[in-house]
Amino acid sequence: MPRTQPSTTNDMPRTTGLPALSGLQQQIVAHLLNRVAFQDYGDCCSVDDLAAQFGRTPGRFLPVLRRLVDKGYVTLSGKTVQWVYPTAEALRQQDPTLSVQEAEKMVRKISGGKGRR
Image (cartoon, rainbow, N blue to C red; front, side, top):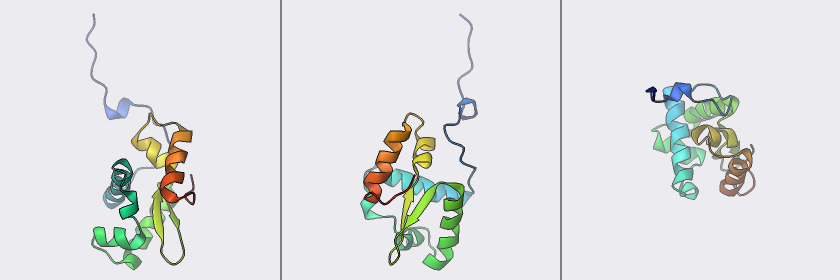
């Protein structure tokens, strides 16, 4: 039986068309996805909370979040207090076994129905 090389991340088909992220952007998305995975999303993830977590003021942190919105990784919701939600596409990029419907259901659950795909 011929020996095959182990699969690498680069060999895996992309499930989403999301662009690459900078270091800080990767850290933010990883933080959000970890909170979802550990089911303690409700204890974090307002713009103010995330800014404090990353040692920045909300005003200086918001442009980074807006770039993540533009890239399709997160959505922002709320007027008085803004909340940050991962998109279904970001969830599927993290876990390619998730169907579109499962990812959208997770977004609805954590956002209380306010999150967008």
